[in-house]
Image (cartoon, rainbow, N blue to C red; front, side, top):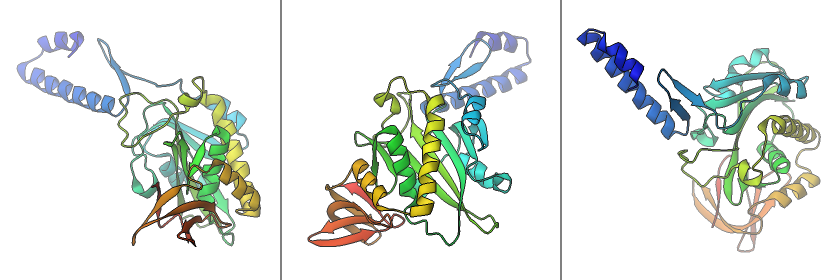
Length: 301
């Protein structure tokens, strides 16, 4: 309890002192919990201050670089995917939402996505396709575009890896928006620089390991522009031969023994990349098998 609060309490009635003391204890508990989640919060004599892990993003600079797409920026938000879903009626294809911290971020299959304040690259964007167009392999396109730009690896279907550890993740959702198009919300989270006390349950990597001087401000527009180019190419060509070859160069598990975890059990084999639909190919005792990304998980054996 700081000195300013103690001085104020001394001039109050016993009841008010008790209520304020309880309030102060609750605030201190909440601050401690937030610190355990990786937020850098400092206390001085009159207030608490949230300290960014990295310099905050410059919205005007990023918006200019990404014209004609519109960029919405909120330092703290529940979920960038949720913001796109809620505002989709007013958005155009390619419009984005950026944030420094999500209070309710989520990953694939509803998993929680932890996001220390200003320590990651977190964004979601609105994209559309002709409803007659197959989007099989779409998540691979997003994952590969990011891996290419960062010069790292992918694990099927769309995990971004560095040195075998997870560097980033992707969440794609179909939006219920009646405009005659297939409407998608694509969310991306990439670790840049995380505090040591961040509570993450699996081995993780950070961009600062690859480049200690990484600058989110300049990387954001380059990454998004390359991602949009890949999506445009996918819309025209699907998972073509060039894509499959590029995927193979970034494939972290190619020719490795792996386990494919399905609802029916675990299937072991040698990972052999992807086919023209983006399905995983596995060589199991001289038999080729393929798997859809929506039904299985892939692990190194």
